[in-house]
Amino acid sequence: MTDIIVIGGGPAGMTAALYALRNGKSVLVLEKHGFGGQITYSPKVENWPGTAQMSGNEYADAFVEQILAQGAEVDLAEALKVEDHGDRKTVYTDDGRQHDTKAVVIATGVKHRMLGLPGENELVGEGISFCAVCDGDFYSGQTVCVAGGGNSALQEAILLAGKCEKVIMLQDLPEFTGEKKLQDILFSRPNVEKRTGVKITALNTEGGALRSVTVEPQDGGAPENVACDGLFVAIGLIPENGAFEKLADLNKWGYFDSGETCDTKTPGVFVAGDCRSKTIRQLTTAAADGAVAALAACRYIDSLG
Image (cartoon, rainbow, N blue to C red; front, side, top):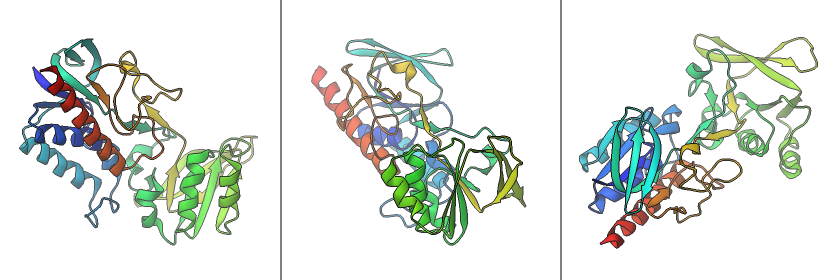
């Protein structure tokens, strides 16, 4: 029986694995796509303490090597459900296998809601971004569009307005839905342009680089190409926690309703990273959650005797 199974191989999950291994526990990490999570979409990471610059893929590759060197087992498989049998949990994966463990750390992360346009996936990290803190500096002195009109989009745009020559807000609804205070701050900036009631319908490239987006007015007006060097998509995040809702309560947005202790209503089940209810979702906060959840899981196992 494995001491701890970590569901998710992003920064939170791999940090949980590292801390558990360092505390003498056996660990299996299950990841359904690719190790590293959302950070692998970032061509440059410049906000990780102690490292001036690295790519998201470099970070992920180095982290996988680190936990493997510490003795972790890893498996590319999706965890479909977890059954609680008291001191024993059983994790079922999509390859038909069952894994018994003493504790589980769920670090399933989130996925960004996409526009659903042709060529969008290929441009992620190469013209399309999701995080102004992570990628805003790459567009200093350039023109960017921001898709969205809620608080997240407004906050991203405020950061970008301090770096970019021009920020163009593209909202498909008739008005922006974010807080008035944020709107007042953003739209007081002379380099911010707002467009409401427009839907992005195409991404236009030249030489593999994004050059403009096509927008169509929702009232049926003529399409228009809006020139830009980059597009920040801020139309929401999608947690994928439904398979575990019997073990851990979810809030109304689908995030695990767990505080900084990373525990849940089920003894021996812990959550970590972007899948948890929190105000800031960054590489550093994901790693912090992973450490907290792992140490809590180690204490839980030790208490079993």
